[in-house]
Length: 118
Ligand SMILES: [Zn+2]
Image (cartoon, rainbow, N blue to C red):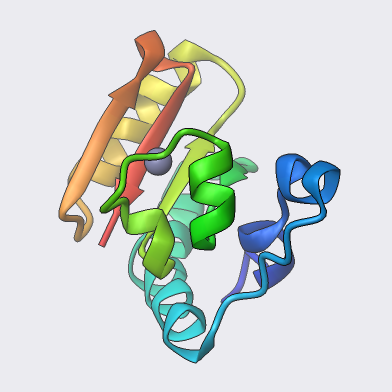
């Protein structure tokens, strides 16, 4: 993991506000590691500019609190919602992600952020 930390992949304002412990288990840690190694780090490298993680791992309580779907890949640490800061930048980031391994790649809310999962 070159550009991303476990902290930013597990941090959540909602979890903090509601006192939810969003510490990933060992499986989720391994999945987060794969997500970064296979997708996020290579994307960041090609993109050449910072990418912000809005949401990475979510424990069940946090996923419920943010209204995530029941079988969300966020629950297992296999997904991240990311943004490069603007729709135009996200368009470029999306094209890069499309060429990298993924099982979900979703252009969210008109390009406000991108959901990617492995
Ligand atoms: Zn997502």
